[in-house]
Length: 254
Image 1 (cartoon, helix red, strand yellow):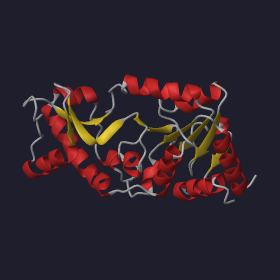
Image 2 (image 1 turned 90 degrees about the vertical axis):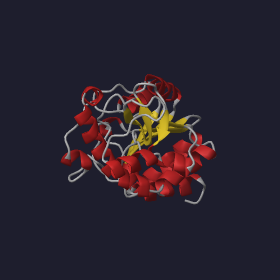
Image 3 (image 1 turned 180 degrees about the vertical axis):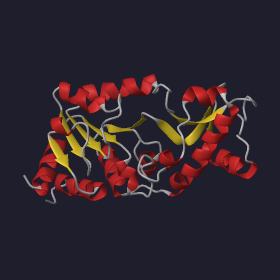
């Protein structure tokens, strides 16, 4: 089948599905100017990994962590949702999809208008205190760190260790979010996996769970993924353009 035929088929499945889940990875946000930090030259290739236990026990590790996050924040702060994000938000608002399960920490789905977003790895738009669990907007804390060079402390409990509200290496994914994601996927007739390499577990297990429960998997990614062999359709075009084409077909324009 041609790419156009596959797009028409996916639109047909979307129209017929009573429960569709959208699953996204870093690829959808690269079109908004946010680099894939695993790629050559990305933040993760230029800095060592700060594991969660080291962050908790070492002041110097916390400073290094904040240096990394302050640099990465530049891309997040300047980014805006792209056509792909906007299509997914529109699908949720029209009842075409239940919502988004995302590996991304950039918050662009919510900015685009999605209301039902499960952030498996948390969000870089907030900070949380590991000692009192208070939560804060990240912008003033990043500004404070850049101005003073000192790791900010929790404004609420004064001495608490502040960390981005993201899941670090060695840190458990939020159990409640993962459980809800499995609930969604257990009921899904269709999952669109968009811009993810589908190799990082347990997130990559979610489309497999849909398949095991009788649903279909559509993968949209330019490169090979860990689940290509079980996909019902694999699309390799640009994410924004491909999702827009599916939406046109879904609306009867193709």
